[in-house]
Amino acid sequence: MKYVSHYEEGSQIVRITDTVSNTTKEYSISSAVELAEGSDEEIRGVNTALGTVRDFSEALAVESMRIRDKVLGKVFDYGYTEDWFLYPIFHVENLTSELIVPDWAEILSESSFRGSNSVVEKVVIGKNLIDIQSMCFKGFSRLKTVELNSKLALIGKQAFYGTDIVDICLPDTLEYIGSSAFTMCRSLKSVKFPNNLSEIGSSVFNGCSKMESLVLSENLMELPEKSFNGCASLRSVTIPGRCETIGESAFCNCDGMKELIIENGCTYIESCAFQGCDAIERITIPASVKEIALDAFSGASEIAYTAYKVWRDSGV
Image (cartoon, rainbow, N blue to C red; front, side):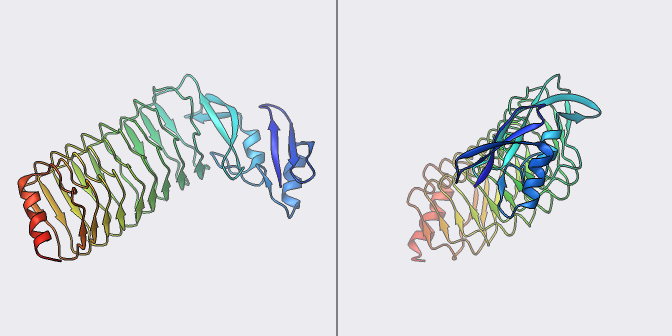
């Protein structure tokens, strides 16, 4: 395997290491790109750059991120993914309150804006972006507004962790949201899943204490552990029938929940799924449920626990 082993910002020279022969050679940027394009063997870090740039030559050419025609920062480092793909990391200085991702970007790589300060209040995603990878905007503590496009398919783990987002419109094209993508977004008030969304990671909205409204996707197959743990302001939740499993602590400590409707088709309710939901006044547990953990409704309201006992005694 060959991979880019060294590059310094502003340099026109790149070093490529061959792990088979254990040799390292220097190439000009143009020669490195030509070598990659003309070789049957993949050269990691040259063929593909995961990030706000789409190939290695463009990655090395980009020295700044432009937002509303202002140069806000420079590429200060290059990192590698687990697959040895190169990606740029932007260090953003003198940042304004609005960050616009350019239309030519298709992927925002893991930690693309690592080290950025916290003055950004609005992010506008370019029209061609399809993938926001892990931790892109983690730590943007003043970020309140995110305008997504109509092509976005993936949001990675911890992508918006700890931001101050109030509302977000998830596009119909969205297929996946990674673990903890919106964890501790304490100002987020409402979420509506598009029906194309079939998979979410664990703790995806964990600790979103002001979330009042939640509409789940009809095609969601599972609610992983701690999906909405601590969403204390939720009032009503309907679990679609295609969602077979409600995971451990999925709605634990949602102590403002008054209505819980589980549609026919759900099969498993795991440990502590509704623990501490002590305000439930109306609940539906369908006959399709085959197994409920003993502590699934621990500390829940008397009405909820009674519904559980009725289900248990029915011998389903």
